[in-house]
Length: 157
Image (cartoon, rainbow, N blue to C red; front, side, top):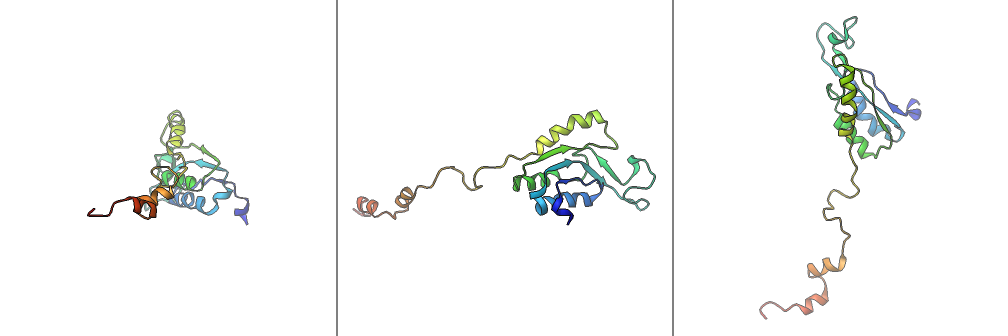
């Protein structure tokens, strides 16, 4: 089976199936992913062109690669999945864009990836205080400690 040797996500298809593949693969084979290529794409179909647009220039094709953040790939969802599975590997910029100059793409690429990295929390989402439970104190506050009942005056005294 090909997935048993799977070690990186690299989906060069510049249309929405790329987003589906990117968004679903981390939850399916996350334990085998060692490198993630951050590459964006968009698909703007017309009635006259397929995905690659035949012999049209890249700027005119419905399916085309874009600089990360300029296309239609939902990188927030992808990086969230990687954070959920505590992904230990690399996120590598694979830049290719039919519109943007390479210097601008290179300058924006690393910050784009850094802005999407998620520092995984070290405690439960509902652990606001970050303190260990104190059984005795909780019992006393709830009035479940017999000793505290004896020392507390009864109502009306």
